[in-house]
Length: 334
View 1: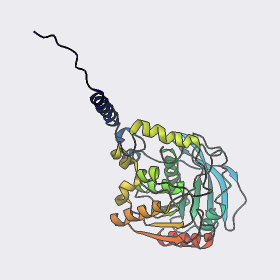
View 2 (view 1 turned 180 degrees about the vertical axis):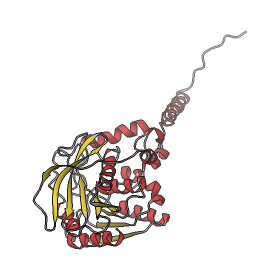
View 3 (view 1 turned 60 degrees about the vertical axis):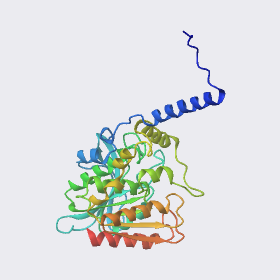
View 4 (view 1 turned 90 degrees about the vertical axis):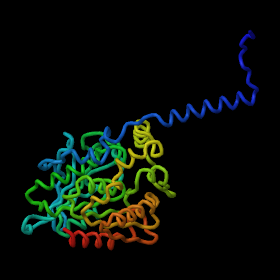
């Protein structure tokens, strides 16, 4: 009986075998099971299950009054954290039921550079002068607010803070709780869109300027910034990699990223939305706005859009008219 000898593969066959093994190993890695969205606090459904009561405002500083309104630095509670905010209240006798109010969601500012009384002064002033109570939340980790600032896209913390700002306004006796809107710029536009789908009943109208309002696959792969755009801090980039390492990329685990994206829930939005953006915006691509428009249209949700040729991320060349349009929009819908 002949002895069994080891099979010696020719070099080409050996290489082919190694290639098949490597592909199989890579395929196995790609198919590794990732946690689903039910395990993530970032999922829209999990955020809907939470409550956002906010708290009574604690006044820490009274500032010089505006033209026809008072200004105070206040704080409220969010996740057990003290969050500071700038509150404006119109002078005079409030209308029956209380003043209409706006949650004011600012865009990205380096948290250690952020100051409650700086930036967005002219923006907030326009709404305050028009007879709205306004509340600009600092978000956690900004200025002297408690908590850690880890960004608004891959962590639910900032969204929690603006929803608790909404809850705080609802329990303030000066506010008409049935007439509250939300304004957001850039990152604040993302927070506004998230809030609209998490709590669609309490936000009666929303305005988003140059908002980061794209699904996550477009945010990750289609966010092209122009010359002079702000540099993204390493800690925010690191946070994205932490989440993708745990839950997979948009290609590896698309169901997860659909479940954490507000764009997947546009049909639940009840409030009319106004969108504004300049065509020379180097921070946020036009595609982010257009994909939101397409989604709102497909969902049959009411929206309007204003485009400013040649204007920048802050609409600084058309600021007066842009603010007037937003004030008129809130007056019509609140």
